[in-house]
Length: 405
Image (tube, rainbow, N blue to C red; front, top):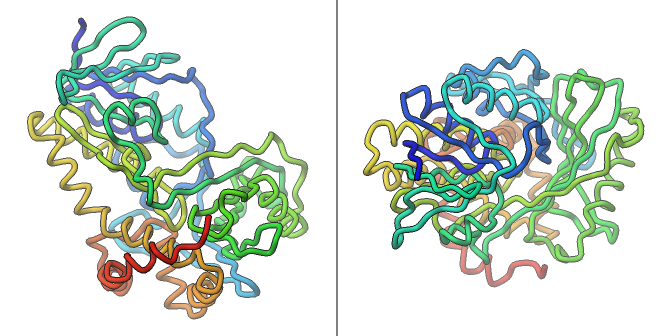
């Protein structure tokens, strides 16, 4: 059995960030990725100012990305073009960076830091009772002081460790493709908050246009599982309908690839245990209000590594505590709010409110940009704390009256 200080299962942004921070801190690190080198992860490719801040902390060269200065929100006949806020906590700009390029840069940085990457290799945690002692991968066993699970949406590893999605909590589905457009250098992300399915039912979710600066735009739609008729929702049809809506304004060419869908877990039963932690999507760290999780993945990966470097024995429990303090209130509020907007009449009223005034639209921007958490100062932070308390009281009613899926 070979030994490393840290083994990481998954080489996406979360896993790579953990590997970079651990290897730079002097730990021996081995990363196992079941896909091949150069994989293209299905994603919206948008990076929030929070994600840019995390990438800057990792010293990732972002010169190949396309800078984004703000968000254009569309709700019915209302349009608001809002710049990213200057908070001092995060960057004041975002970016669009196709995942094949983002992931490649992060993996390159991990290798340069000293981490070992093994592609086309599926790793399975080794258990001694309830303790993870390492992994089995490629016919070999690897012992480790900490096993970091960065496997994205739940799968075999999550089932083995009891880290599956909480069944009665919301989740999301999204689909995207690319198209050529003369507006590829637009400096705003665009989000249309008023979507309807082919039956005219309002969809809690949004359609997006994320200009990549390379002649193309990432076009996609996402929906929450709390809507009426979610199980019958046809994502391809929803994307086609949205494409028709934006086609003339963006002067779109043909789709450059077949639309591809993916699942967005927004909860987890357990995100740590003796000898292991789950990070990023595998820990349910996805904003229910926008489906974004790259920034949370980067932050949680770095945090897990830093805690292990400081005190290996207490790292898993301390990680769970700090992630809870940083993210749980906001994510919990988002999940509860998703039950509300699963009702069409509440969704319609909520969208009018979300963009109705400049001040409220600015708060919506912070929510859509993952710029709100427990420590957020100002009005947005206060609204989050009040909403968390209020929706906690309403939670039993929200669940009993949720829209039929």
